[in-house]
Image (tube, rainbow, N blue to C red; front, top):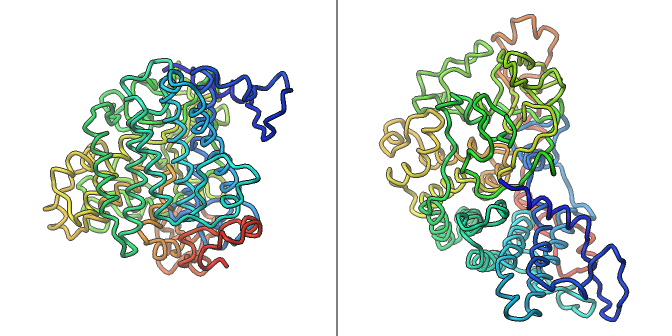
Length: 569
C-alpha cells in the first residue's frame, strides 16, 4: 500500500485554496492558490478532491457514537443514550456538513468551466466528490431527516435557497442516490486503481455505500408502514454486485493466528503487529478505509481508562458454539464464576471483549506494550479493575493497538462483512424470508469465521428462534464499535423499546464477584436479579421525537422556513 493519498491530504492542508466572492480581486496571498491560477490540469482537480478524505470516520468517532447507544456505558453518562439532550443554538455537524457540501458542489460546478479534454481527464475526481457529497447528505438525513438541498455554490443573491424550506426526506434520499449513481458510473473498479492511488474511492465503495443508504431508508420506511421495497431492491442489487465481483474476501487467518485472528485483523499495520507478521497488505476485506500511515499520518486511540464499558446486553448477544443463544443452549456455563460465561461462545466474544485473567497488551503505558523479540514480555493481566478499566465488568479491546505509538491501522469505513449483512437483511426484509442459499453466501460466512454452527431455516424453526432477530444479532456483533448501533435501532423503530432499558453489568449477587475478596470494597447498585446497574431505567428515556435530532435553533432564527423537527418545537 502506498501513502501518496496521505501526502495529498497534507498538501491540501498546507496549500488552502482561497475561495472568494469578489471576482474582480486580482491580488492573492503568495502562499495560497486562487481560482485564477488553479484548476488548470487534472492533478489540481485531484488535489482538491483529496481534501475530503481527511474527514472520513475514525475509530474514536465511531466508538463515541456507539457509546450513545444501549451497548456501552461511558464514564460520564451520554445525554444521547439516556435521552436527556435538548436543542442547542449551533451544531458542528450541521455547519461542517454544509461546508463540505459547498466545497464538493464547487468542484462539480468547476468542471463545467473547463474544456472537453480536461473534463474527460477529471471525471473520476468529480465521481469522488459526488461520493463524498452523498456521504455528507446521508449523515444529515440520519440525524435530521429532510434538510435543505443546496445544489449550487451560493452567493448573497440566492435568497430562495438561502432562506428556503427543507427538502422532504424522500427528496434528500433521491438526491443522495443520484449522486451515488453518478459516482458509480465515473469511478474505477478496485482492480483498476493504480498502486499509488490505492485508498481512493472505487466503484465498489460507491456501490457498497449505495447499499447502505438504500437499506437504511428502505427499512426506515418499512417499519413506519411506508413502502420501502424499491429501496430494498436497490440495496440487494448494489450489494450483489460487490459480492459477485470477487474483489474482496473475508479476513480469516486462523491458520497462523489461531482464535485471535479476528482481533489482529483490526490492528494490522505495515509494521509487525501480530505473531505471524501479517500486515495491511495481507487482508482484502476492507472496501474503503480512513487510511493512516505510520510515517506520515499516525492514528490515535482512547486511553484504556477513558474507554466506555460494554454492557451486559451486548455480552449476552454472543451465541454458544452450537449456534444457540445462551438462554437456549446447554453449552452455556452460567455466570457463577468470573470466567464461566466466556466458555463455549462465539470466537468474537474474546476477540472483542478482554477475557478475565488473560494477559493483554496495549499501546499505553510502556510496560503494557508488545515486544515481538520477546513475546513473553510486557502486558498485563485483566483483573477486572472496577472504577479504573471498567464500570460493568466487561472491557472491549477491538481496534486497540498493542504497540507503543506511533501506530497506523487503517479504519474500515466500509468492509465486505457489512456488505454481506446488508444483502442478507435486505433480502429478508423484502420478502419476510430468506433462503438457506442466501444465508450461506452471507451470514454463514461470518458465522463460520466465528466458529459457530450455520444458520438455516430449519435450525431457526426447530429451536424456536426468530430469523430477523438472528440476522440483527449478527449485524450488531460484527459491526460493534463501527458506529452503526444507534442508527440501526432508529431505522428498525425499536429504539423506543431498547434505549429506555437500564444499562447493566455483570451478575454480582451470589457469584464469585460477591464472594471473592478481590472485589470486597466494591459496592455497586444492583437490580432485583443481582446485576450491576450503571444507569437505571428510571433515568433513561426515548420518545418519538428522539428518532430525529433537533435542528440547531440559530438556523431556524436565521431562516424561519426551516421548521423544527416534531417534538422539539
